[in-house]
Length: 515
Image (cartoon, rainbow, N blue to C red; front, side, top):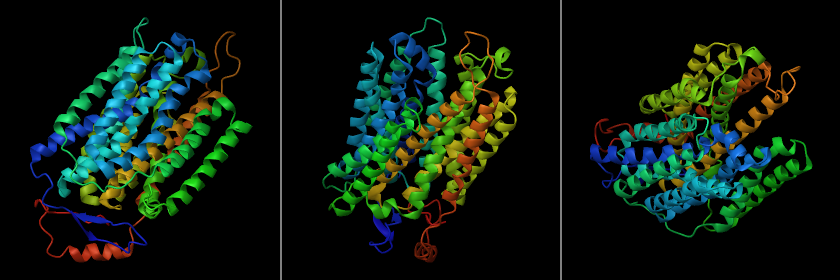
């Protein structure tokens, strides 16, 4: 594969790749590869949301404190922050498939550890190992870029991205089903995760071809450690701020430490010969805006999960609102429709990207996310209103997941695909941590007064209104990422190349990434 549209190497990354003859041309082979990678990508989001419905049961079973049990979710985010950029870069340099297989093996081990754990430290260790799964998604996209014909690539990336969105909802629903009985063991959810991880491992080993292109070189260990430390401190301050106090010396100190470490990381990346992240790529406008959109999208997605889950399980007799839903009903009736919508929206997003471009789809994501959240702020007392809004939000998340990788892939050279999408994955994880922390703080601080004696504090209705308005604003802020255009010189070159370009059904057809 050779680069056909470039800009000055000192100013911008390579923007456009033309296909080479080694790209897989068999539609059946492509479908098999896409299916295997979709299954692997689905595991990523499942690992993040899997324990959310059962945290209370885990806390009771293990005798853990509220502060301690929060580490069941925090550990996964911190692990992802450290390992995703490192593994994304390692895959670019030494082979995507071997890295994918290694990550899946670690995830299987982590799932088994979590399923067998009978104390909190061992469970947290399992969750740390499961957190490496976040690296699967950027690696899968890099494989698609090599193995799928260019005119099929938008649809393939959208489908894999759609399973990522679907997996988040599927984990919540499946966990609800497995733990619905009063005497059910929460460990069943982790055994389910083990089964999915084993299935994905076998699929990748047997169906995904070995990487053809490797950039080689050494891994920037110092850069990886400094970036990991910066992200770890940032996510730690966000995820634990509610427990520590948002303005406590510990929270402020950890947050300031993350800023210092980010500055150290940037300095290191500028002086080493083979940096983990090319800083020119990192600040390239489309890439930077896609990462900011990722933060907002992750925020909105978790605000949807947590806001609706809390709302529908509230006792109507005590609060005057809520739906008295069990974990099972909340999962199946209120969350499953949105998960199904995200899967259905994936191929639609791929088609829209191919016809209108990823920036249009990212703008559509902002509208389809902000409007239903605004509606929820207005009406969250009717079942149809909550389910309908959740369906549209699920579709919006899927569209956003499809658009961001497409923008990034069209803006960076092939040898930086893994690390670029890895950073985008971390931006979504950061947004998810922010969404979880903000929603939890809002619901915990705005409570109903004068509840009967012995009844635990319950969030007021205004708390949910504030939550949904905040999420609507977050989705609206996804939109600017679709307004950023590539450099004019790229557009000019691509437009000139449209002359004598092959027909769309040709195996050598490529779509200009600048439109």
